[in-house]
Length: 298
Image (cartoon, rainbow, N blue to C red; front, top):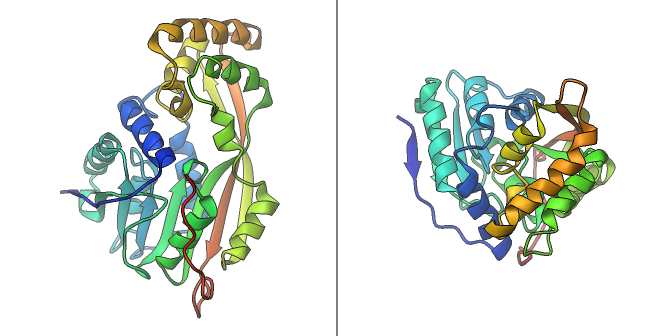
């Protein structure tokens, strides 16, 4: 039986807003239709090269895409702990683990990916898929994750390196109706490009950094399918601030812009450059000497 426990967790306004958005979108997140989180999770677990018997932490585990794949990879003898601040996402992850017969190899608990309230030096790997860009201070999060690793342990995460530029006008047309100054690409663009990410990881004290960049193609049967998927994925972080009365007009503006982008069969495609990073805690010594905790950005 999958364990689901409770853990007190702080957080900034940004963290609370992101958690609320994904809790609202949990039932539809990566649930049928075009798949995004699942293929990226599979690739992340592959590059992380998890081994049987390992203990793994999945931060911001969401609906369990990484969680169940990691639990399978560390079997027999391993265990995966997943944390997330969205209760409905945690329940979906628990249900999926049980459905796949992995319930006894998984523990789920409420927790903040930016500041996991867990004791140091207990995991062989920390995984984070499509999470880092949503955190108030990504570099501080990377440092905190590193302190949870055993010597030589690894952190592995995925992030969007380059969105499909053809889609910029579409997203911005929708977000123009939101009562917030933030847009989806302002979140995505907060993280550095691969060279910058390698430098960031080195600055945090990680060694043996490897970064892989690949193109992920998402296909939608129709503009309507894209709209439905977006209402339960990352864009909902900003779209939830659109007043309900204005949402139909936002949709109409997006449909108008998407019409000339359709393939001959009526479908749509997005080509997104994704990065996958793997970095190691040094075998000896702390991740970063005498590093004081910085206040989390608000």
